[in-house]
Image (cartoon, rainbow, N blue to C red; front, side, top):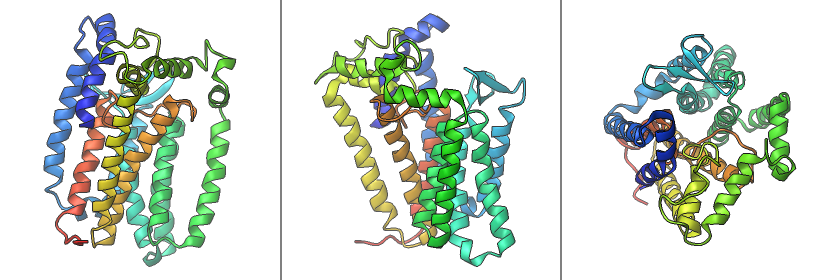
Length: 349
């Protein structure tokens, strides 16, 4: 239901942009449908694979994702958009390796923290470096939003696993201080922070996107203007079909539609957690819980950004926003989730 709603909203929010830049109103929706079909096919395949194959080779997948992230800096291969090196040019499509990295990070975290007490010190340090270095590269793209999401995934797995508490709290404090330093190290991040605190202080520059998003919510009122009738998507609201698609949805479907979307996410999270926590095998259960948490936390971050509760981070809304890398990656993690909860007995109660 989330994906179907996403397809409707992607078309509604992008048909004018597609016609303006590509001469085809169906440019974005056509690609999104292809990505959705590819993602569904991958889910059907991955659910039949052995979960142990993926988790036992977690650090291999992490290195593959790391190599892909590094390729974004290579001239002729990486694509620079608004000063960010986040994509790889694959001809007709662009791949965003950060979307892959956020889930390989979950697998590495599960592998490391579940085995931490059994490994020697050298193995621990090497594994920890392989876990933390790839997300740090995201800071230099820069993709601070994806970096923060990866770090939250790591913290969540560490907290939920058998990782010793004394190490966890020390790791958490060190990482928190480091993230705070990284956040204020660049002037544009500080500017975003001030825009978040008072977007009307600079309404034509740093605060413009947040103000237009809030106007979209205000225009939607209780029941919205109707599908296709958004005013903000008429080139007022940047990234209307991507990071701020929820604003267009709220304007067209109103408060009632927004509550419906929140209910769908809560339904997804509740049943995802419920099934995952009933899996008897700890490693499988931990990965399944972390996978659902990652999707839900990204959705929460995006929602908070669109209503002005957090600074803009460049994270889209899972299953709804336009973006092939994100949509396919989310389907892949669902396939791995289904693989993790299968092939083992599940508690009946």
